[in-house]
Length: 366
Image (cartoon, rainbow, N blue to C red):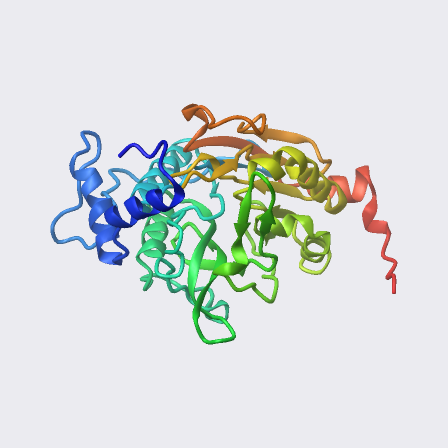
């Protein structure tokens, strides 16, 4: 269906007509993709998995030195179709595994950028933080599929965020949380963080209010052991609040912090790189910021420019995106791609203790 020239209301109506929110339907359509594939065989009829069988288990990641690990960063153009998005993630995860990566980082709202008015009905249940680590199976078909992707590809996967059900407004009406998840290479859920700072903007070019459907989280997640070292979880707009990253670094001892995002083009052009570099410099952390990119089904545009930044604030990866506010879209070569970075985990210690020597300052300011 050609959506060019359609109003937002027409786009959303068309999306509703072709989109089912039934979880079993998502799994069925995900499996159907592989039935028509010439390179991957569909699962057997006795299997309940939404994923195709993996012919061979990828070898464990082989770092080039004792302190180096290879990571993969995915830059997505998520659609109205959960099944399509999961297929994309499956393919990128397979590429990351073939490249001997230990981790894969996905952007905010990685598995579904829902049609307007459908955020709440498309949200899924996630185990509570108090239940972690939580092993599969999961009630959420999306989380179950992501868990299988992690296990089959021997990857720790940072699921930038998905919409979690279970929140409610003051009047009792249903709401969602914007929740970041971390799955280890066995498919076990080991980390969860609900976005604290919710985004709203009202300008001549961009109008968006996350608070219309979403409740804020109320606490940070402790830094989680990963191949990158202790990993701090944050999401998108959290980037603008430095006390959050400072707490992750000094209280929770994070050596890397993620900012999975779906920045608008307007704010991205002005603020994205400088804010991420600032967070890296002030905390002497690796920063991994996987981003949505391009024009989405709804007509909304995401800035892109997924970045990896080292503890000195140097950009070591920029995956490209919008270059000016007048652009209608980015080239397809920038959408649904994965890039790799060899990360020196020990570089954090070197910067903190030897280069900048910030660890000698332990003054408590009151």
